[in-house]
Image (cartoon, rainbow, N blue to C red; front, side, top):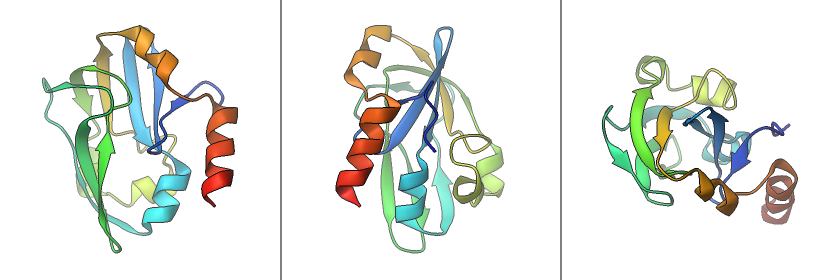
Length: 127
């Protein structure tokens, strides 16, 4: 269920590294816990983000939740499709519903993240 080539945070975000860019999203577990997502607040292109600090938020029928940056760097692209269709996060959280692309400042930060097996163990604990 959780792609092996992604890295994960304990707060339920993922990052897929493509060269010097990290594609960021929320996990299947996160969207399931949130319920129906109705709004996504994305960072602006050019924003500098720090690992572990908020980069945006997701609003569902249940709550508003911060999205934390899994890596530090500069936002170079955001998924504008989510502005019109935030429910994409419920349908395809590990694919079409990525949130932002971040040019990595410190690739070594990836060592602070969980691999797919570690993340699945975390989800099993929390379930």
